[in-house]
Image (spheres, rainbow, N blue to C red):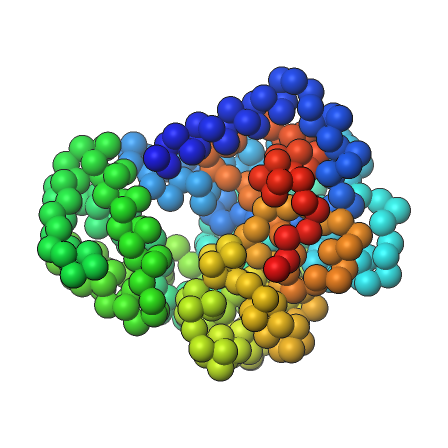
Length: 352
Ligand SMILES: [Zn+2]
């Protein structure tokens, strides 16, 4: 199913390109700017089974996007500057922001040097448990479990289930099924218990994954010395905030900010909701982020920034640079707003 969906989206992006429809839609749907969302930036990984490939782009694709933006004279600005322009209703120039979620070491090693080539700022949104080396990057752990295993025994919704994971196709199907099941579990404790059990049975060390992939506090300290880098909060445990009590959700926001501010001695004024879709961030979370005093909070809902986004500063949409679609021809489609407009049924604001 996921492959089919990817193919449909790719066909849609290509159709927008080849028909030139993005040229027609640009004046209406490009808005005033774009917040791009990235996770990993690194060379393509070895191995055919890459279930999290959508979360990574190659360095040359990031470079191509930056060159495209410069060629269109689009300003590349910090999130503070975005906040200022929205507050002042200053839309004389189009803008783009780059946000990188989770705090991966490849952001420093591959993304930052390319951002420097273009003198372009970026914001890293850090989950404080990840920087602590104690985070649960369960979607990566799940991929590692399945890559190793020939079959997986697991109890899904009370039913003992054996999943074949001996071929590429069955590994992909098992990943999709287990990923959807884990995301549907009611609490962060349930998720951690289930992925913890899978990791123990298949010899996968979650803490080692976290330390291997994420920047430590010490490393972040030197990264944020670069004037192009700013840092925002992305919760403590990277839980689904909408599934928590209001008090826990509030603490996840404010405690992550405090921990980052203490460790890095920088003010933290921006937030990104973990997962960030409508199942993980809705009206209650938008209000909590506002009450916590964040200048902006970004979702993973797809969309461009419009003048009216100034009314919804803690419900800002983003445009994903998705590893499944790294064809340079789609760059003008992504900046035209045509793709996200289609996705949103041609609504400009989706903040309910
Ligand atoms: Zn995240």
